[in-house]
Structures are given as structure tokens and as C-alpha cells.
Length: 101
Image (cartoon, rainbow, N blue to C red; front, side):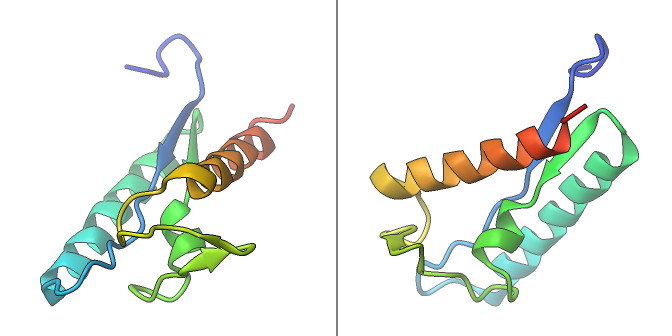
């Protein structure tokens, strides 16, 4: 529906939440949801995948605490202040690189 008028749609995966304690099934659920998002993105050439999960958590549920000296998610879940700007810049860069003519 979003791409019906030839618009490009960006789908973003979600990084694992690192708040403790979390049941092991939460990481499995996150992986399942992210794989669905990836498959939907790859099924439509008008869709761009922004794999935030793999950028923040390159090794499964082991996530980065900081990038470029910026603490990513002080509470283990949410991007705020400088980390929100860092992530937004990265996401927009991924989208822009994917839709270049």
C-alpha cells in the first residue's frame, strides 16, 4: 500500500533489548520478527532494508554499548539525545545510499 504510488519504503529491523533479566525467548522472538521484516523488504524492489539490528548487535544478542564514543541505549532499549542523532544519521545514510539513481 505504501509503495503503490511508486514511493520507496524503508523498513528497519530492531536491535535486541539488553535490559536484564530477559528471557532467552525474547531474543528468539526479536530474531523471528527481524527475519520477517527482512523477507518483506527483499520481496519488493521498492523497499529498502535498514538493518539497524545488525549494526547495533552485530553478534546476535550481544549488542554494542557505544559507537563513536556515544552511549547507544543507556536504559538498554531506547536511543536518546546524542545516540538518537547518531542512529538517525546512520539510518538516513542507509536510505540515501540505497535510493541513489
